[in-house]
Image (cartoon, rainbow, N blue to C red):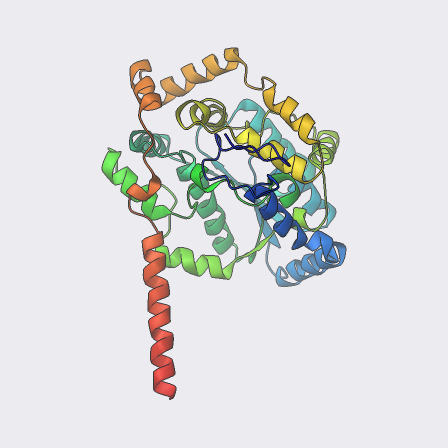
Length: 371
């Protein structure tokens, strides 16, 4: 086992971990590079004000200046609070996949109550979404959250197009979320091709209502919408964010990152460590070490603490299996079956390759024509 000497990442959790001769890992260097390029280190306050003014200017004559997807978690809740302070007119968007905890519902309600922002909620068809989720179980790929993450993205895109909104606020924050999760833990969240191929192979129902765009429509919307990561314009600690939203929004903590969703809680807290030998908390604590919010020693101690009790695991397991109509035997077979890579199924990367090859051929023809 290789362990980073600066953060707490190791090669058991991340099989692609790379360390240099000082014992410092690739995630630490990626963080250092990303943090240097954040607006917070380059006239963040000035750039933040300029961005706010730009959004307000482009929002004239429209009902909203920008759009924000919310889950009731820390980052999106604090971002809603920040947008309120900046006087922005925000459309809040929530995608309900049937797994929200009661606490998440209350936190979302409080965001609307204290900001006065409008909320649009897209409730996914449960039987159809369940069929897609079960297909991902049968595919044995690691990113079981891909269908929901994609659905949320498209829900935001559709609302932005509906109201002619040009700006999407994102809760991404280098200081508390780092850059990207290890490649072996995730898959491209825009990959509708992967979702469709897995569902076609293992699903039973037709994908009629699941939010999705074609490859080229996704491409056009990606180019049109501008993403604004306000949390990168100033350094805000995780503790400060929590203290603020608890004070002003009566926000209640879930006890874990992304634990506002019952399936996400069970997936991250049980399925990932049990089947895929991945514990995301190691990465989350490593970021806090990299950003000097806690020490490496504190991170190691927190990492060893119980955060998902056996009682809650048992309760969540019973709930998840019952809701998905999975037997104990079927679930245990899933847990004990070897992982299958997302790349074993069709992927949007093939379309990107065709797209870029077409662009390159077009440029070559244009150069030849102009000679």
